[in-house]
Image (spheres, one colour):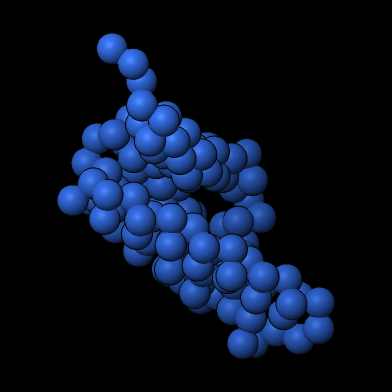
Amino acid sequence: MLISPDWVLLVLGRILLGGLFVYGGVHHVFIMAPLTAAISARGVPAPRLVLIAGSAFQTIAGALFTLDVYVAACAFGLIAFTIIASIMLLNFWDMEGQMRATAKTMWQTNLAIIGGLLIAAAYAL
């Protein structure tokens, strides 16, 4: 049995896209203090709990997505996660100068990631 090129591309795409969330969630463990402070500064109640829950969610959903388990559900959950995290931490509308430009670029990147997740969800349905 030959492995088809479309299957290889699909697997590579899931590894890259899902791996982004797995890496991000695990990485948060190592930068807990500054992220908790950033979330707290936005007025979010229980910022450490929010960070731990969000990091666990993105790690687990990213891993399931990568492993081809509940791909559409994981994609939709990760879309919601990305939107919520962007609103909480990338509030470019309240920023000026280089910080604003950087936050806007990060929003654009997140929108592209959401696009990839939508494609993956559509392919999985």
